[in-house]
Length: 348
Ligand code: 5AD
Ligand code: SF4
Image (tube, rainbow, N blue to C red; front, top):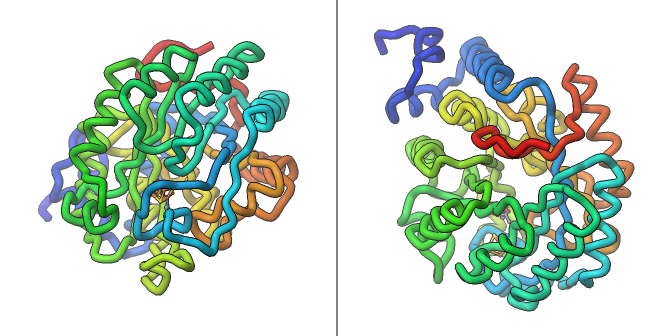
């Protein structure tokens, strides 16, 4: 490459080949340049505040069979749970009392939580607080997305997982990538702030695929994008595959920040699970969001997408407090606002 690394990092638009080049960097000094450029772009477009999103995992039932995931329907070894609507509403209250003003309601694809039950939960939370409500309930019907938006939901998370259509079908059997993209576009068209993202280090995935993941996030004009390492999960067909690498996850995070600019990017729990300093490294390589798991006992230990999830055996309030300290130790401020999309003007 004729251009030097510094020139490349300051280019306004990166081509696919340039993204691949950056993802292939190995030299530690060059990686440090990449991470510090990502940190600079993060500071310029998102500021220095770190937004907290309180997660409630409301059900670990799932009708899908994603080949990498511990919640897949065919995993008979996993004890399944559903929270009651009252438990969910009470947990949302605990989250807002902590000064966290985004509530993420998350589950496997579980039809038990139907249009009415989710609408009821949203409506009840909305009655008591102006916190942003994010749904992460998998692929649901367009009518449901619409009903939940009307009930008061603000955001929807639906990861694209991989931008390679062949790999997508290999990992997901019944589902296909084009359908998932239709869902993401529909969600955006009816006014949700939309988050997506991928898994890093899945079997057969290449660096070219990861470049396409970043470019797909760009073309979807996302408000949020999450990049997490694949962690092999017992009782799944991929239980003996290689674990995703922390360094590759950081490279994807950093390049995504440089390409996507004003998008919320979390330092993921999965990264923190495979690297003891995962949050710190993510937050200094482009990330500006942290998503503490506030699911109460006993459920929090049963949401076993992958093993060893950091914090899942700790008291949720204690582990959230510890997370806040880690963020502040980096010299970053914690935001006590909703932290809406940086692309729209709805901050309160
Ligand atoms: N390792 C890491 N992340 C996983 N997910 C599913 N299985 C794994 C795994 N084994 C992520 C997917 C999905 C979300 C529910 O969790 O990206 O969107
Ligand atoms: Fe279900 Fe999501 Fe896991 Fe797939 S990744 S099996 S849809 S919880």
